[in-house]
Image 1: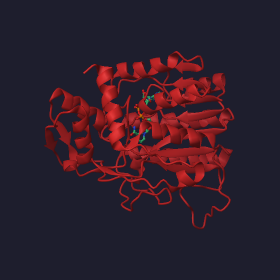
Image 2: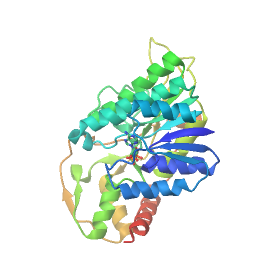
Image 3: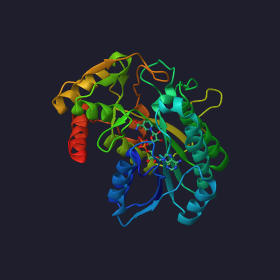
Length: 335
Ligand SMILES: NC(=O)c1ccc[n+]([C@@H]2O[C@H](COP(=O)([O-])OP(=O)(O)OC[C@H]3O[C@@H](n4cnc5c(N)ncnc54)[C@H](O)[C@@H]3O)[C@@H](O)[C@H]2O)c1
């Protein structure tokens, strides 16, 4: 298949593209390689892809309407996986406009590209952060998510709403994936595992928010990629049982659906740090701090629908996943 993947210099996008190329798909990879974090890391991820004959790199901004119109018209992808976005909850308090440009305008351009070029399935990244103020655990795609706590979360929820209108109006099959705290080799420098590993190795103190009592449904990168590939391969269908009298938020009369992809096994941040310490072989100096604005105390994914629809549940434990990350980090940065 010819698949347009956005965010291919990113953590998840680069690993997904790798997997699709390995199985023989053709990948058009769009990423503007912005400097939100270390550009060298993004270039290194990309260089693992550029050697593949089936990979075409397109270094452009998804928020540029003219450019995106041209990319869709030129490449005519059969399917699209849209992962490019301004990520990060905390940064959305500092620079909200970046989220409007990349996540709202960018998403709009993807929808229009799909609509006008007869794309057969759009899969896009949503986030566990859409659960916001919800406290019913585990988080279910059948509950409503109308109380986001950050503009990042609101932009992801907005994507789900925008996708529904295109599924309804133009019959575009869309699948939104709510990823739960993804970690693993080639991970993001603005996320906890990367920051903690780097600082513990350097003998520097780490900031531990919410005194380490946070719980996160940490999900290993390979499990995320497996979930994306499986949902991509099964095109979203209308739900014949859906009723507007009791509307289920996760499906529709239109070809629209939403899944959680999480490990379904929340781990306390303090435990997560212990495992890093063990693998690094050094104790962390911890700066215990209160919870940050925009953050939520816990995330926990109900993945029943993923299991019933695509026969899959993430299975990698944090001990194995953290070990893989620390080994990759030491090798990549030679520390
Ligand atoms: N990593 C997680 O824990 C997590 C959790 C939930 C949701 N997500 C979502 O998954 C997706 C991928 O996340 P990631 O962790 O790989 O992040 P990432 O920042 O590593 O990757 C995103 C990529 O998109 C690119 N990008 C950003 N804005 C762009 C623009 N306007 N035009 C073109 N390219 C642009 C960046 O250069 C980057 O390479 C994002 O949509 C993110 O919001 C990630």
